[in-house]
Structure formats: C-alpha cells, structure tokens
Amino acid sequence: MEKEKPNSENSVKYIIHKPLAYGKKLYIGEFLAEKFIKLVAFISIAAIFAIFYYVFQEATYAFKSPEKINEYVQKSHLNSNQNTSSDNLKQESYNSNSDNSTSPSTNQEDLKQESYSSNVDQNLKQESYSPTTTEGELKQDTYSSEKDVPKQIVETKNKSKLKKIETSVETPIENLTESDKQAISQRAQILKTSLEETLGEKPITFKEMFSPNDYIDNKPDYVWQPVGNTPKFSFIPLFYGALKVTMIGLVIAAPLAILAAIFTVSFAPKWLKEIIKPAIEILAGFPSVVLGFFCLMTLATVIQEVFHTTYRLNSFVGGIGMALAVIPIIYTVTEDALTAIPRFMSEASLALGASRWQTAWRVLLPSAAPGVFAALILGFGRAFGETMIALMATGNAALVSNNIFESVRTMAATIGAEMAEVEFRGVHYGVLFLIGAILFMVTFSLNALAEFYVRKKLMKRIQGL
Image (tube, rainbow, N blue to C red):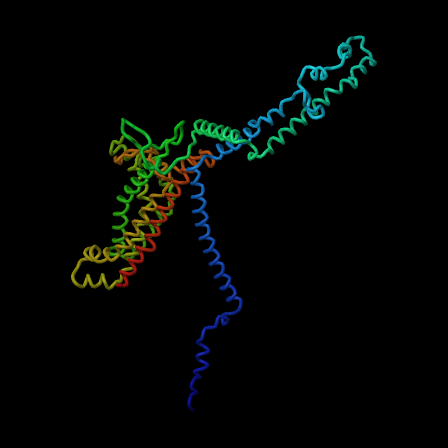
C-alpha cells in the first residue's frame, strides 16, 4: 500500500508564520512592548535636546547684566518717573491752594487749625490723676468733638498720599518730556554702573575669556579669579589644565590597556581570559570618588616621596587617577575590535611561519586600528569630563605650566567646586554654564566621531570594502 504524498499546500500553510499563531495575548504584549520601546527612545532623545537647550540658555547670562542689576534699574526708572515730572512734584507738595477735602495745607493758618481747641489745656490738666480723682473727673478725660478734627485730617492726609502715589506710578513714561527722559536714562546708567562696580558683576565677551587678562612679572597672563572687586574669567587655564591631566592619563592608560587587550586575544589561554577580562571590567564599576580619595590619601604621598615634588597634589597624581578610570574603557573597546578580526587572517599569518607576537603586532593590530582609535577617543572624552578625581587629586590651582608636578584646575572640577556658591543667574553663574556647554560639545563631538566615523571605517576594513 503506497503512502500518500503530503499535500504541498498544507505544508506551506504549516510553515507560513502568522502573528496570531502564538496567541492573541502574546501578540498584544509584543505590540505594547514595541510601542513602549519607541516611547522610551523618543523620551531619551527629547531629554538630550532639553538638557542641551537648558545649558546653553543658562550660559547666556554670562554675556548680559545680572537680574539683580536689571531689577534695580527698573526700579530706578519707576522712581525717576515719579520724581522727574515738575507737575507731579507740585501736586505732591501741600500748599494753601490744595483742596481741603483731599489734603491739608502747610501754611501757618492751616497748621493752627490742626492744633487743638482752647480747652485742651484745661482737659490736659484734668488728665493728670491725683489721689482725689473721682469717676466724674475720669469721664472728662475723653476728648470733645473739636478734638476729633486731627484724626480726620490724618486719615484724609494718608488717603491723599496713597492716591497721589498711585496716580504718579500709573503715569506713562511716554507723557514725559525729552529732558525728563534723558534724565531718567542718565540716572539708570549711573545706577547700573555703580551696581556693577559694587557687586563685581559685569558682562563678559568671548575675547575676554580667551585673551590675557592680567600681568604677572610684567608679562601678560591668563588668570581665573572669579571672586573680587574685578573678577577675571579666563578660560585658558581651565582648558589647559583639563587637557594636561587628560593627556597624562592617556599616556599611562593607553599602552597598558592596549597591551592587555592584545594579550587577552592572542596569548592568554581560555581559562585565564575568563579571569582577566571580568577583572578589568569590574574596575569600570568603581565610583570615581573612591579613585579620587585613593589618589588624595595614598597615591599623592607616595608620588611626593618618590619624586620629591613641591606640591603634594598635582597634575601627575590626577593623571594617574584618570588612567585608572580610563583603562577599562580602552581595554574593552580594543578587545572587542581585536576579537572582531576574522580568524582566517591570524591563521594565515601563523601558517606562513609568523610568530604569535608578529601576528598580533603586524596583522591584528593594524586591522583593528580604527577600533583602537575609537577606544582612545572614548577614553579621552571620559577623562576630559571627569569631575571627582580632578577635584580631589589635582590641587585646583588654575596655573598654565608645562611642569607635570604642578597643580592644575580642570573645567569639570571648576563647575563642581564653584556652582554651589555663585549668585543665581549672575555673570559667574553664566560663565560656569558656558564652561559646561563647551565641555558638553567637546565630549559629544568626540563620542560621535568614535561611534559614527571610526567604527564605520573599522567595519569596512573587516569586511574588505
């Protein structure tokens, strides 16, 4: 008996994937998960743009007058508007021609009307209590109807003052004469200048931040001194300090991390590879404040005893701390780039008689060069934006010097140290946000370059394109 051949149509229907074949409940769950992932991605992108916009918006306060000065200037405009008009000044002075119902007059006759009646002296004598005072005499202490007049005058006087102040405040500045407007502007400018000199808050320009702002030993120098009668906001010492510490960290970390990655990929046995890689990557989980505390308490003393340095905390100590923070990043990215190289390239090199070291140095490393370069860029961005290690281990002295054993001050450490003590939306406040914006642009550009350009070249080289 022959077996029936399977129906091709049934087999095709059985193979075809249908979304509802897994059940309606599971399909709804996948749909909701997809929408949730899209929502999270959109929120993340929106948050990045919102932070970017907020930082640059707050940085604009470095280039305009502080709000305190503007408030005082606005008040000066208001006070000048009240006091410059001669008509208003005449209306506010009380004279004999004023309306008695609204304001009292100031001549002698009107002042006499404000005095008490002739019976005041007798009543005052009756106010002094004596042992023989009776209840009838106490009743006479109350003032007569003539003595109610001063109370009414005082009330009308206060009402007239309030009314005149309201009318003077509501007077628009357009109704003033040209001389009055010029007087108001001159007073506002004088007040603004005096406030800037008193508060030490004066808007800055990009030229002031990137040009010498002081003279030391009769030589122009760059000074960061945000506190004082004449604050100095030079960006050069901070940028130079951050670059100096970062380069020291990379010089120490890059050879160690790259050689460790080469050893892991080409020389280490499998059991040792499973130990080395997690051990180095665990270092990336160390809080930066712990590394900074280690550099502050232990490493700085060792460096000073070995090299006999003048400053205990200096850029070299901070560079070693940066290296400890950067090594895991460079190692991980470099190891991934070396592992992505096809095995036939290393096998062909070994088959031609090359040693493992020659294969790693002349075959694997050149092929993974874009990935190694991306690792260095990521490490540079990580060290350039580090805050706690730089704040605790570099000495925080804004000096421009080529000596690696002198103290420096980085951009991120400046923001962390001074942001809590500045006036809200003042010039110093805006300068710190401007530093943060520049730091953000530098790190963002480096990371974008590493991710979208260098890695792309690496993939093309691996694929032989």
